[in-house]
Length: 394
Image 1: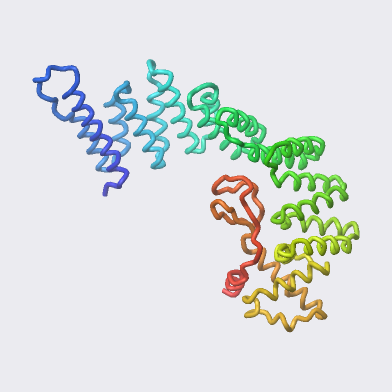
Image 2: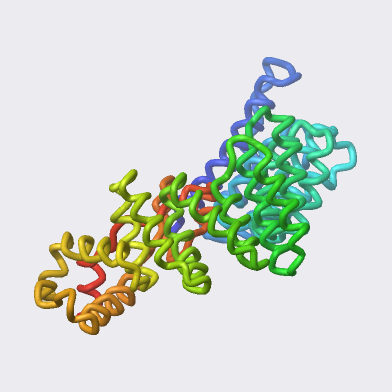
């Protein structure tokens, strides 16, 4: 049975037929001359479409309708329709057919190149799409659109320096602020340099990332990671402390690293006092501290243990599975077992969620894979124990 898309294509053919009739009826001809009959070729094409013979219909259409000034927009419409239906190979053929016309106007050629580049992008042929978008970004009327698509390709291919260059050019042409986006590209470059132990280059990239406004919260975190990797524990601790105090949601990333450094440096008592001071100023952060501790199985720090106990006591769902009252503070082994079990359960659920589209993930993703927005993920402040525990017993 013909699909809705088939009827759309058939409608396009009928539109062509109507256009041909109108041109014959109202074009440059004697007014008393009767209108020409409906072209039989249109009926043949329509028959192919209604019988789901799309390949034959396409071949028939390309042979029947010569690309000229009167039909070129119809070709564009048909090609775009095929792309939206996912039949990219057919869209490519149509747009290549337009480009092959020797007397094509420059503006129409750019339009065809843009359509073909979008075909390649939809088909995943990123290298071919990139070449066409680069060409269109160099002075055509489609510069902004081409640069937008190039940035999308460079992000997907993780070619961050090219992404920086394209974003800077786009910002000038469009007047849009892309400072935050560019800062993330520099952070990506810094992390790549750090992985290759080129810490001087990594610091240079972080400096560039932090040079604009607004700053990305990620810059300080990357800087702290670099300090930690190079053995500068004092700088790392200072940066992690600033992150925790200034940007509460990043405590889920900063606190585990801080605990690791303080454990190695035998400074857990100093950390305990620092967290107490912070919580006196911001008591609402207790749940974030507890949640981070549960997920990462952090313990043996008095203030963190206190936060976790208060956190668990406030979870009514847990009371149905665990009698927390029987797990006394003196029974350290029982407490440890409960916390290890809860940590394992908590890690089985998404920890972060995008504020723009709701995409969830187990780890912090600076760019949301779903909506492609930067720095929109936030950690959960509580574990959904009802969901986790139900799954664990089914």
